[in-house]
Image (cartoon, rainbow, N blue to C red; front, side, top):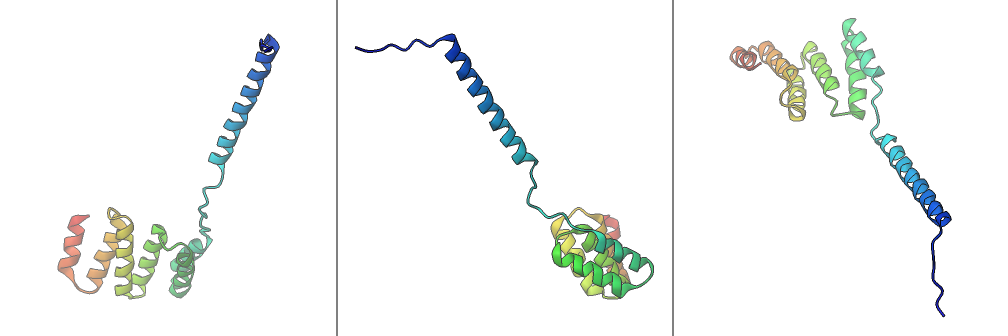
Length: 138
């Protein structure tokens, strides 16, 4: 003899409650995952700020040291690379400044700041035609 199962209204309500709770738990988990930390470390920009203050005070050694410390942790930070290139230009380390400007252009070829650094390097090296060509491209 087979028993037949006849769901009652009570069973349907329980199944609906379990479905609603399960759906709520799933949505909550998805929300928590999406709000979580992306795993990328946010740079502490205090070293850059210290470097800018030192630069304004014409303490280029301190500025260079602080920005190098920052770049050791975040080597692809465009703002820090640009500032570092500025420090290098001010300390007449023109070839290294050119290298950093090219690093910036590898990250983002459209940045005019890197081209401005290259123009300044050419100008200070008395490569006036190259500097003029770059200024026309900006």
